[in-house]
Image (cartoon, rainbow, N blue to C red; front, side, top):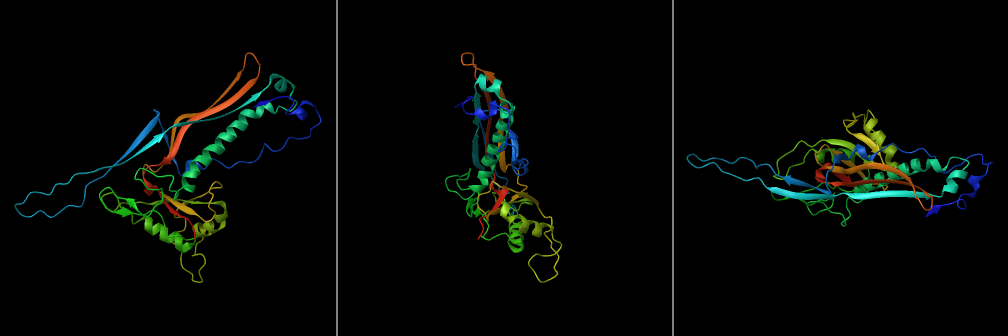
Length: 296
């Protein structure tokens, strides 16, 4: 579609006090607070899990030492996709614009790119239990039956409950009981509480109060400032919440080409074209990166 003088006739004449609808305050970039940005140099990248070894066994006197093998685990493939958007303006519209609106199109494209990136990233959380979106181990991001390579399962899907002091404490304890793919204990620590906007006040009470919230006792709040807080307007489930951990190779924003802007003229039509593109993928590798609660 091409913007012509007919589309924006009011911009061709003086007399408009102010143009509104395009200049609102935006959130700072949020997805980078929990997604690790990984640079890519190929069309797709593969992430391969491997295990350590099991517990040691008893060596009977005179008998050989028991030998075990590590395992090759699950493989995650992330394919870089090109995203883009553009706008076309006639030369006449550009020349006759009285309010410098056309020259602001690059900044509008930048805003669209940022909003798109946030939407793509936070949809990973929105789809945490959606069976149409599975990871390397064949299960969804948040599941009660993630298979362990060495046998057995583990869960990063918390028992459904709204965010309270109690449910938050249970989540912290659950994270600290994590195991690796050989069922050995790992030191997994909580990092960031991720919430929709409607849980902001409740979350701040839990994280910032000196005393236990919602209690008549004078108990110390032992989980005060236990995690950072990210309030996300792109979270669609109003009572869901999640806690990210320090698990390596967790939530990944894979970047093949950074956001680029272009501007050119068509020779025959003299139309002015603006565009922006980038290449990326976003997903998760190790599900231990996130413990999710869908809310009550």
